[in-house]
Length: 200
Image: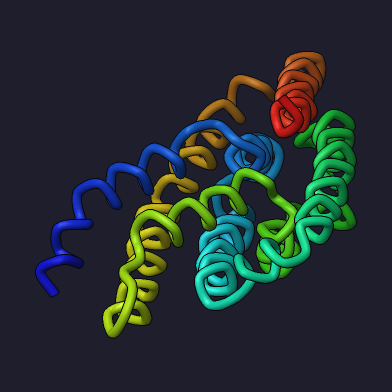
């Protein structure tokens, strides 16, 4: 149990730094905050946090070994995730103005956000790194996996909230259609640019 406690500080540091820094999830959460507000973005936030927890458990309990055995599967997910990110970038860029949003225009749903984690290369790399570095072998393995997953989720959700709050705060300044369009195109460009980083 002492070994698990020793992991606490580096684990929290890694979870915080990787969860709060810009990436596909956070960019889309900021865009959701701007276009839909905080309350309507809550399912998106919860989906990111719970989705990463599920992804991490999958990696820790077998998905990582599947990727080692079949690296083409991970490569395939990487390409699927990249195409999906480009599609999301386009959706962000062409989002309607606040006053024009119809009922058919809605933020990412809870289940969509969960599913996205499995094709989000940054989330996948975070999960693999955490499983390799912070879990313990032997009898403590299952406990350490659950501990790492829970800590990541507890840190990840507030980090998601920060980005939605940031977007929601900008909402009042972006009621002008031209300003909102410029902001959406900026976030869309960052989302698309993040795809290029996966191949560097």
